[in-house]
Image: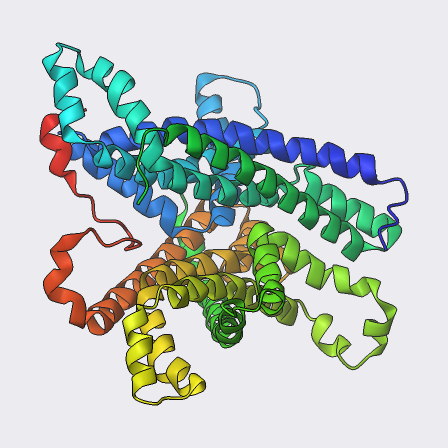
Amino acid sequence: MLDLHGYLPLILKGTLLTVEVAVLSLLMAILLGLIGAAAKLSGSRGVRLLAQVYTTVIRGVPDLVLMTLIYFGGQILVNDIGDRLGWDYVDVSPFAAGVLTIGFIFGAYLTETFRGGIMAVSRGEIEAGHAYGMTPRQVFFRITMPAMVRHALPGFSNNWLVLAKTTALVSVIGLHDMVYNAGQAGGATRQPFTFYLLVALLFLVLTGVSDIGLRWVERRYSVGVRKA
Amino acid sequence: MDVNVILENIPLYIEGMWVTVQLVVLSLILGLALAVPLALVATSRRRFIAFWPRAYIYFFRGTPLLVQMFMIYHGTAQFDWLKDSALWVVFKEAYWCALIAFALNTAAYTGEMLRGAIAQTPFGEVEAARAYGMSRWTRFRRIILPSACRRALPSYGNEVIFMLHGSALAGVITIVDLFGAAKIVNARHFVPFESFMAAGFFYLCLTLLIVWIFRIAETHWHAYMRPREEEGEEKGSFPARSAPAYAAKGL
């Protein structure tokens, strides 16, 4: 059934792009998530409100709508600003728009994950850090962060798996990821089902491999934790 | 910002919203109807029987909805026997394809949720039912399923929201849902910012509506748990109420 008419390399090239988009947007999401979590736990009411608006709005609007908004709308916005500053016409690449949007969306989800993780870190450990005379920044990076990882990992894994699947949307804004390439190959060979099935299986491989990797990380970070 | 374009096109958005609501409600009903037997079979003790629904769930949860929808909409054209059959009336229509894809997808997620909830049924409840002499099926219908549904309610709320968001994909295959309406407005007037922003606003309203409905549903069906509410923070409530108890200490 899987006669690919020599289109396998094209699909695999798309797979590589999919992975690239996923990893880059994950990095951005982690950064935003940490900032968001810090903001949500901050003492300033304004900052907390801002973070709340961010997570509520992002989680209330479909990813596809956000992506087209950032891709098409961002194009106009950037050039409006550019016009005033006297830049030349700027082309927002679908790659940048895709990574930015997905990173932006999952930053909101990771904000919640990280906030929960940070709140689960035992207060005594943090107080001990303060007692040693560490600055708040040192306490955060030396104590809160490493201890938070274990609590945040299950949520993090879940978000990563959803993120990996969300990358399929970049094909809608014209990025040549594996879904887009499967459409091309399927159209050319008149076997769209075969190629979409192949892509679906590749997604299963991707999520399967990350599942194994994440379980390994989870075991490492749970060393020394007694299980019931 | 050109608000007038949006105001002029409000009827189109309303029409799109109606299609979105239709798609979401229908796929949720179909999905739930499919999820219950799926979960029941997946909890079977016989490995060989439980394997099939679990494989189904694994496939549909592990692959993007977009790909599933493309497989059904674009993919089915590959099979001549299907094209020649009476079923083609269904598979040639984007609307039905989207609906089938959404229903199959949400069935997998809901099925997994229910499977987990059924597996967690306190054994005492089952034992009590047995002591009353209930048959297997009666036990499932009267005890296990209602109790599992209660436990699955908060995560089901999230699934409904995911379905609403996922339904925007219908706009990709020419259906004029809320997202499709925004696409049309953008194509006619070239106002990407305004058109998609308006769609986003309507989606946000629908999301908040769903959140509100589920909050009422939870207070109703979880009433028996109320005195013990302080024990732990509710999971899955959306949007998560921020609890800045930690805030005083700073980071």
